[in-house]
Length: 439
Image (cartoon, rainbow, N blue to C red; front, side, top):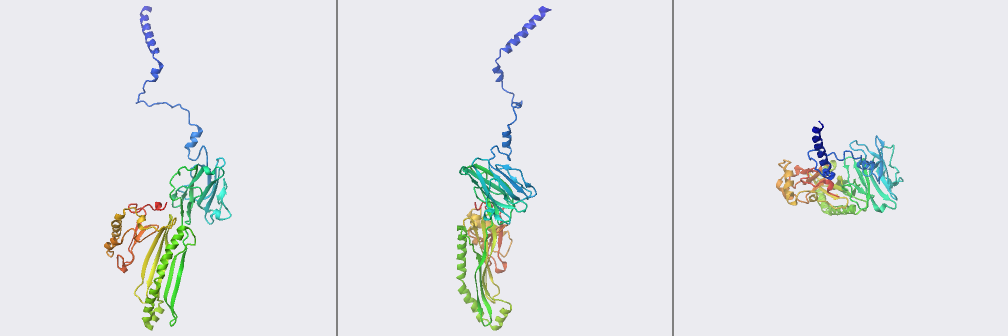
């Protein structure tokens, strides 16, 4: 029995000796089966706490900038840091107050807000706030509308502070920096959210800087010329003159430029007064006493008047209309001529229709004539429309879009009124995006 088992044991021993002779490195270099998923790292340790914090947008390992907001219906939210949003989106809740500070050594932050019913804090005895102080209000239900912030301290020259707000009716606006205004003024729009970051000096903006601030500028409309001619025999005003226009008291280059344009328009209008007066008195003096008494009864007179209105005032764009009305006493009807001008309120430059269009100038006539054709009006001569359209064609802005128009008699009869098309701002096949018209 023992003799039969001996050969088998010797064979088993030989096999074991062969395997123990294979170097361990050879086994380690054996390629994995690609069809079998690797489990390497399955038992790796969990990420460090610092790594988890960096993955959370509301927390930064450095925490260079910290801020918290007081929100309608919520009160003070928790502190946020380094670009995380503070406030709300989609709830229509206003920001009412804010505190901002930085943990960086030898660096501080100062800030002010534009507050409902108060305006910019620096224009009042409230002044700028600094390093965690409250800017805004508590318990008054006043909305924040805009904000400015700057860095202070020995290290201020080495950093930029960037900030971006979410505004009512607009959404997220562009990033502003280092004391620039962010938000809106003059519209009554509330701030709803904010993000703030402190970056090394000269770093790229965290995102788009387009339209960080939107201000409705104050446009005072004044009557700058008013006069009349009386007939003493009838104790009656026979001719009336009236001119209304914008008059900016501010002395910024942009508003000065706009003032100068309207100075020229008024001078041109006043230059027509002598000839108009001559013709108006001719009609009056040639009429009989019976007709004159009839005019007095119905309070009719010759008129040469200009009235003005603001039709668009946002996105750093200002569009103004003037209606020039002239009529001679006793005539069948007067004549209304609409003039309109649109300006870049940052520079005072007047914008032509061609500046707003996204289409090639060579296609302007045909494409806009097609838009007029969609009116389906037999009284509008499309050939005249085609000939009179161009980069300097008449237009004005409204909230609905760009309105291209012709005055009476230009492309239709007097009774047809003023043929007008409105191109919605969504028509990017024809228009540049209005948000990008002025950087």
